[in-house]
Image (tube, rainbow, N blue to C red):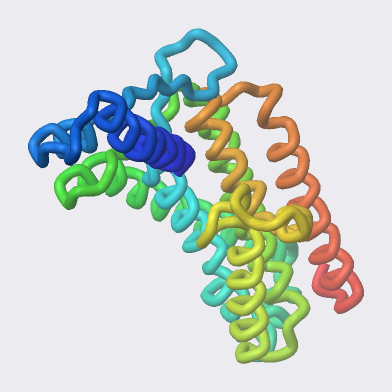
Length: 266
């Protein structure tokens, strides 16, 4: 958008200054159509230098670097409907009470749910990223260029998945009915997505919306992928993302533990 805006300004200068004044000074009564068109079609070449923290091969930003991670994160957090609703259903059906009769069974059940949904989240993200790499170019969309920093990419992905699962379990633990869990979970994720820059990039929002968006876990997940794609995954730039997602996960797990402890499930 910035490049297009600058190009429009330079074209306007060329059209207004060069076309209108040049031929007047040369004594022409009218501008020949072929010459006018040639000048109008002339474009000023702009050399772009993208942001980078090192001298590694320069990355050219494209729309896929926002859309693929954004919708992957959105889909990942939407597991609150299936996981949260399932937890409420099992609690209301008495499954939690029956599990209490078996030592450690309840804790093992929660761990197994966590691992299963972690696998689902990672598989879902992998599928969407593969679509961005291999399918997008065949349907006229920019190819997703993956970052070279594999370890930071893995850390951000795991933290995003764990935070999504923790939030889903939190909603399922505190909801009283399955409908309440589904309704609140879906609406909250939509709100988090809206203020977190999933639909519209956060950096083009007004300042107050950018400030409000800092409370959204989806915003910090997406911010981590921005750092990976556009800054080659520098650890110093990922500190904010990692800290927030880790703190968000710890708070969710702590609230879950307190609720289950009060209800004598653990």
